[in-house]
Amino acid sequence: MTSPTGTGCPHCGWPDGAEPFQVLSRHVTAAGLTLWTRCGCGSLQVRNVDDRGVRIVSRSRPATAQSSPASR
Image 1 (cartoon, rainbow, N blue to C red):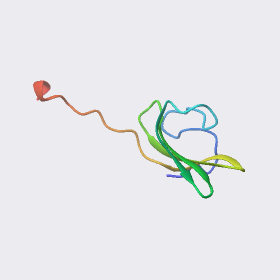
Image 2: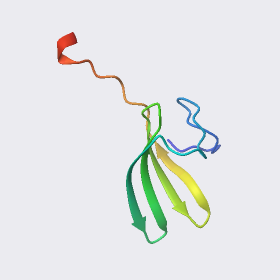
Image 3: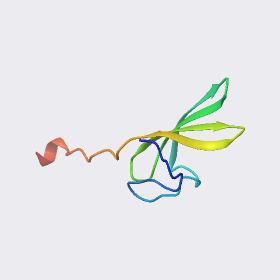
């Protein structure tokens, strides 16, 4: 899911311009930098960083809670 408005996470409202909750990996590319991040709600995000700024180019839904084996 792409953020067409560039305002915030559609799942929890965390501002797109704020620091991500967790940076999972950084990859230098010919165009700049690609960051895989996780929002506070659990949504994975792919952020491209270049001379135009930071853009979220892909976003997943938050992960669903897994039940523990003891609770089954």
